[in-house]
Length: 243
Image (cartoon, rainbow, N blue to C red):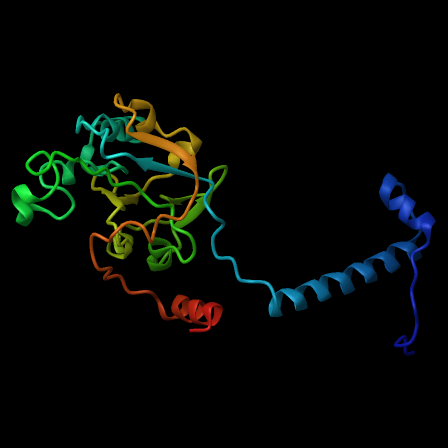
């Protein structure tokens, strides 16, 4: 029997039952279920043609640094690892000061013409940008170990998925991925769930926690990414961005 031309209407009484959480008849239940299937199908069809594919939710917070206030004490690096890892390990800190301390981000070849305490005295603090989509470290991870973590929506490493391949380190243009050789796991800034310990520990007020904004186009990369993205992920990006 064909129902192509049959029209369905939900009575006000049925709608009241739904709103009040009351029981309704089997016929009303089937009618409501049918309407919901149609609505969901229509939504899926709209999403497939109009809605953008969201890979990662936008971060809600960001740590920013003021180099003119930094005194190079590196307390932020210690606070990061002592709070998160239970040890003093500046080399695995999610904020990077030590590598820029003497000569700045451009390194030794700039000599006294560069930054750092052996240059113009300006100490540059490197912090994670909490990149918007596409997120380089997440795209490069073959195990999808870099995920969004509420409430800050920071991009974090799931240690249960990370196998220590270090592909994420090769993917970050700012070299902000850290690697803990004791655990053989990658790690990165997760904003301490909205209460960054590096910000708390800075005696000079050189670090601030602010609402997220995109800084990826305002900071020069430190390195050329060398990670290889899997063909499946690359195709997904191509389909999404129509490149």
